[in-house]
Length: 376
Ligand SMILES: NC(=O)CC[C@H](N)C(=O)O
Image (cartoon, rainbow, N blue to C red; front, side, top):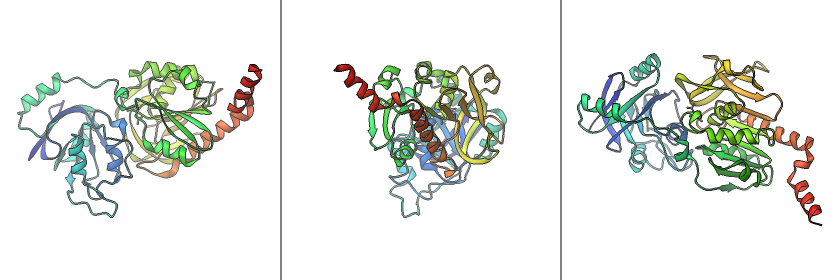
């Protein structure tokens, strides 16, 4: 069956339909990862977008139950050069076609994804309409123009209730704006007691959970869509050690008085070089973002730039000059991607331990003892 993808600049791609049938609109973005399509499909930060993979062969190793980055995919459409319907891998439990059908995600294959990517790189990110139906180009353009862009996607991707991944060590409250499972996995592997809370949890509710540190997750959309989340971070800043990832990094920057902007076509892939400005060392990072912290907005804030992107020199990492708080624009949880950056979770835990040593009254045990003394 035929499928069509029409971009807002009028470029039309005609290919073959796979996955679900129907019609969808969204921002069309490209990911340059050679592997990891399952993790890309299930990364909540892609909520509402139509994603194209620049690697030409997709589906060849199937889908398994272990590699999901969230309970369900949130993307609207999936665009590939060649869709392989028969996976060949011992871990494969079902096919990509089955996954897309199950979640109503419309796929298109057999289009020139290189041309599509070059178009986006040249023009900047564009919206598009993807259909397995037989509408004319004029009808598709009309529908695309009358559709509205998604806003506040965070409210769709965040958990609606608190859940935990218990552990014997530091209690980390993870604010879930659309968190990738990899973040919980990395913290749990280090023995943390992880409490995942909805995106609209107040600072007071978080305090009552007695965190040792606060992790701000990744998430979809424009960081300026969630001003309430910025306010909460502002309140907690200085009270607890904070580590922000991707959307969490952008929200942390806004909470510290910096500003964000939209990149021309974003960074999405598994091999973005990032330089640590303190050591001069370059790390290979996994990325998925369309927004960035504006460099010109850093001056006058309490923030210091710690990492930059070696390709376009945009900000990739920040730290607070006085409070124990830092953030990165990329994905240290590496799913998909290189394991280079797992050390950042260790750095977060070291920061928490140092902070606790300097502020002994802030430990949970000291609080409980003070409460008992007060009661006597
Ligand atoms: N992965 C993320 O958290 C993405 C952050 C934000 N939605 C952006 O596109 O820039």
